[in-house]
Length: 247
Ligand SMILES: Cc1cc2nc3c(=O)[nH]c(=O)nc-3n(C[C@H](O)[C@H](O)[C@H](O)COP(=O)(O)OP(=O)(O)OC[C@H]3O[C@@H](n4cnc5c(N)ncnc54)[C@H](O)[C@@H]3O)c2cc1C
Image (cartoon, rainbow, N blue to C red; front, side, top):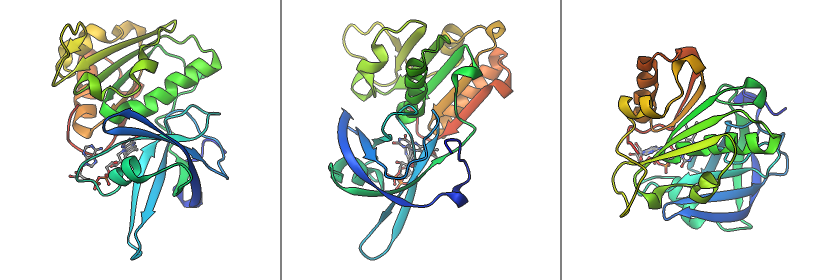
């Protein structure tokens, strides 16, 4: 069933790479043909396992980038000294096999009936599960109002730029560029701090449902900033991608 959250019941299977899409110089989306996929919910992730010729195995988690009902896809950022991500972004080609299991996770998920308004806050590749939620909203015809605050290092690092900036009723996207802004940039600059959150976030009275995703330090700073503004902690759901780096 689509809500499966318990890894113990999931089995590894070999998916086939159907397509590879370049999103930014460091980020690729890998579209997968998964023969035995039970369906997934917006916000869930899956496990990918690589096995070297000597039998050494490495496993990593990747958020599912596609909406329920769409082909399974992951969007991976290459970390130069990483064990797994450079293989996924640089080596995989359509037709290759890839071992995975999933879907995993039942907490960081959004369904239209969960309502809103929604505040989505992403740092770097943390936008991946939030993109799945936005697509799910679009595909289900939901009119829940959404604000996405998305922090990237530079404009070239913004993942899904065209898709996110496509005008949609009820969806506002605010970009902040932390390290480099192009000439004439009229968006926000700098890291997501209390002042930016106060400016962009819904008012406390709107009692928004919040999803925050990205590097650990980013997620912690945003969540505590929102609590500082008076947001109820139980309305804030977080997903940490594991490093302390920031976007
Ligand atoms: C629930 C969940 C969902 C995730 N979804 C995605 C996703 O959609 N897209 C995606 O690209 N990644 C995602 N990640 C991160 C992913 O699982 C890997 O950690 C990442 O690809 C690095 O793996 P690696 O083997 O290349 O690097 P490693 O060999 O594990 O690490 C190399 C170096 O990079 C540092 N590092 C590890 N993880 C990160 C990170 N996330 N950012 C910056 N530095 C890091 C390590 O400390 C180490 O110094 C997710 C993680 C979790 C827990």
